[in-house]
Image 1 (cartoon, one colour):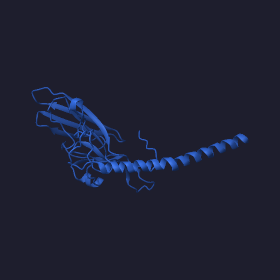
Image 2 (spheres, rainbow, N blue to C red):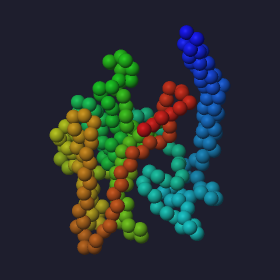
Image 3 (cartoon, one colour):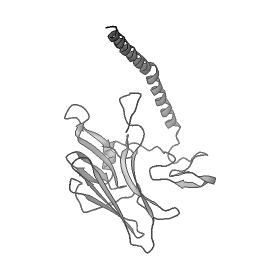
Image 4 (spheres, one colour):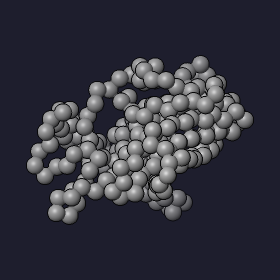
Length: 246
């Protein structure tokens, strides 16, 4: 009986310690971090302002003896704040291909060839079955950008024109992306290279993306493919001092 009382007492004391730490340490620390983040954002230079000494232009990080080292698209050395629009406004502002499956709905942006609009139709924001579907991916320039992008990097020193985030792809054929109905995007760089991206999806959540490059020019070209899942900022949470992602 005495051991049981000791166990209960230890549990109660542990709970008091955890709650006290959260109240007196965790919450003040989180509030301090929020204030510091807000202050840093206010101190960031306005778009178009000249970089201060010691900083580099977007897309270039300082290298030896002042030389610039190219980075992957979306991984620029300096983040320039842009005006945020609503998710709906951004989606309507560019040409897109619809995504419609039993588990997913959304669209693919022809500008940039990104998958950046995706909702989980079987999961709702609240226990109310009529509440909005959980939004997984959102385009850039929205409050919480989260998207998948793919592309190529040219060999060092090459001046090859490659599709970028502002490149508008062309859909081969028509129709939405659905189960057993893939879609194909195409882009011609005007220098003999034709890029094709075929996107398919199953009846659950699995996307399969196949990229191809046809070289119709007379000289060989070396390209390095990449794929990124990009998220800007911190996703919204319930206010706990721990943010786990994985």
